[in-house]
Image (cartoon, rainbow, N blue to C red):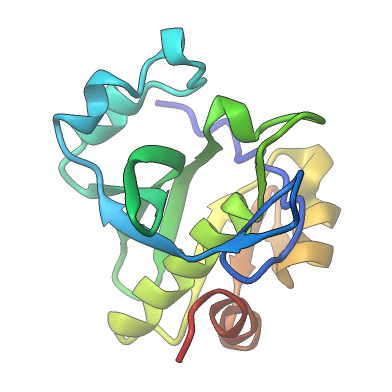
Length: 172
């Protein structure tokens, strides 16, 4: 399958996620997606990517971002693969209600990327995360995530940038 490149927009780096109407912040959990979750992660419900296919890839782990105490509503999803020396982000997607000008919550993609960095540290990879970007978003990821453009459309998040993201999203 051809990698098309990630095209999530980091709307805001927040502490947890932030309601765009009230400005209130809500603590989040990142949980493993279950087969049961997949029943609602469909194109009909506004999801763009084929998460069922993603879920079937044995080398990938799919995680959902939820608000603590409200784990039934998925705010966003991420597909990660643990490689030999880094974590690779295959997909990142906001729930339909968190996209566009009328989104309900800001900070979802940043939260998920910070989680990928955390997984990288847990595996002993010093926060190193790689992903392929859509060409038009390379500068956006450099500015918002502190990612480095390493050639083509390949981007990496190094230890320094990873620590900043983790410090922002995860309470000590």
